[in-house]
Every structure is written in C-alpha cells, then in structure tokens.
Length: 113
Length: 113
Image (tube, rainbow over all chains, first blue to last red; front, top):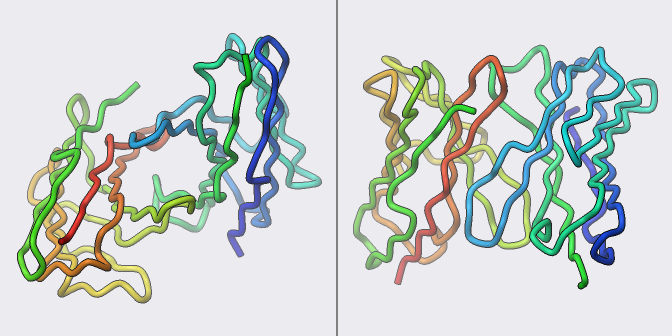
C-alpha cells in the first residue's frame, strides 16, 4: 500500500534542532518530499529527495533517507519560531501518475521562545 | 520553484448554490493537476486527477457529479462544487507537477452556510 506515517506533534525550544520522522510502506517510491503548511495556507515545498539518495542538505534542512527501513527524516537546524507549522511527509510511487502524492497526517511543530 | 495560483482563497456560499475554484500554473504548463481536500487536523485526501483535454479521474467515493472538474487549457483547472451543502465545507487545495516536484496552490477555504 501507500501508507505514510508521521508522529503528530513535536515541541522544541528556539535554537535547538528539530527532527521530524516519517515512515512509508511502498518500496517503489521514486521521490520523497517534505512540505510545510502554515495556518490557513497551502503547502510549501521545502525539499525532496530521490529514492536512490540517502541524504540531502539544503541550508538549515537535512533530509535523511533509509530506504531499507523505509524511514525518512527532516532535521531543521537552529529552529526558529517562524518554523512553527505543520510538516507533511509525502511520497510519489512509480506506478502512479507523475505528481500524484501520498501524504502522512502531518507533524505539528511548535517552537517555544 | 514553479508557481501555482488558486482562487479564491476564501468563499462563503449558501446551501444549494454552486462554487467554482480555479487553479492556475503561472510559469509552466501542466497537463495534469490534482485536487485535494483537507479536513481539520487531517492529511490531504486526493479527490481527483485533472487531465488537460480529457475527463478527470475521480478517487473512489468522490461524486463526480457533485465535484465537477474542467481542465480546458494547460494552465487552468477548475473545480466546481455543485449544490453545496454544509458538509462540503472544507479546505480544497490543487497541485501541479513539474520535474522538480509537485507544487501546490494556496488553498481555498469553502464555508457553506
């Protein structure tokens, strides 16, 4: 199937690192994505990783992919209050239409000053 | 990244009326767009895949006569909620894919009173 699972809540203190975890079940995933959603807004693509990569870094964001365990994580360094939002993990799979994504339920990140 | 614009961002309508939501790809052409629905504190549920020049493909359980999708050009897809009822109140989001990932509109908050 295409189940994508995430923990629902994460709280961190400003300046600390945040790590949001995600697991998925479909081994034919092609790309894995992280999106950010602020209240009342659409989804902002933060980063994505191709399924044959194991790490991608983009400024404060580090994505780690363990394909064997079907585990994806997003690390946000030096977390700021402006990072408070819901973060969605999503995957695309080989057998689906290009652009069709399967989403987790989202992790609510709260950053305390 | 690619820009997808959705309009309106908020709409309130009376029960029994119809509402049209537009999704535009501003700087790229999209043969395929997607329409999602998001319930409070929930993930995104794919409603349908919109195909330029042909009929949309609806997910199981989504009424095609209620949620009319038209994709008449490579940059515009519309979702019309017909004979809206309060249970149709939700957040609707569209997306379009490029080689760099799937990009989302800002979403439309529909309230049916």
